[in-house]
Length: 315
Image (cartoon, rainbow, N blue to C red; front, top):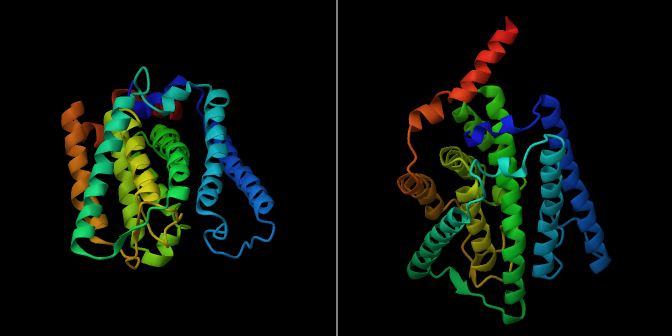
């Protein structure tokens, strides 16, 4: 059974998806209330008028923990909903394989981390905007926090968009390609609150949406989230512990500081135009992805069967 068809392992209806969506939102909301309570306990005089990051007056590692904590609540709500509302194995929204393939995860993590490091090295060589920023008093705690919290945060996004939502939309549209397109658009638009949008402009939505589509294609063609989760985790861990700036969604005491003004830079353009398509080709070669046209633009036998069942029920 293909990954997009894993919904068949449980009890699926519009009501189950609506209820799960509400519970995940409530989990995120409760997490934010908990975080605000912790923040005020740490800094009673904290102001909530600091824009996208109300914790900017707190120590940077504390900020990172507080910003990531709501994702733990949302993830818990999603996993519990899959198990008890959808009545299906949690593994079914992670992969179509018998077990989660950590080799795939760490391959994608290593490859993308290496490419990002290469981009940074080229920038250091060609400009003077990146500076050494190592702070021994905060870095090692930052490393520990990033290696725990950021993989959870990125896992939440991958499981929600490329797992639960991709399968749910796929069940109703009966078409994997349209499911990937719509989840990519939703993924991109939900990043609208990030400070990068205000600093760079609405063009950054193209990066978010196309990256969401890229990750959706990987999930569908590889029948699992392992590669996408590794890629996504590497992206955020790199931004946390290797290269930071003072205008992104979270600011840390990373090894390097980028002082260049906000822009939709050459690295983002290369990522969309060359690196992500190249990744698809490399992963396709390694994992022997076949029948691209049929899988992305046609109906798989089981989804086609669902479509015919729906037509019979309408007659």
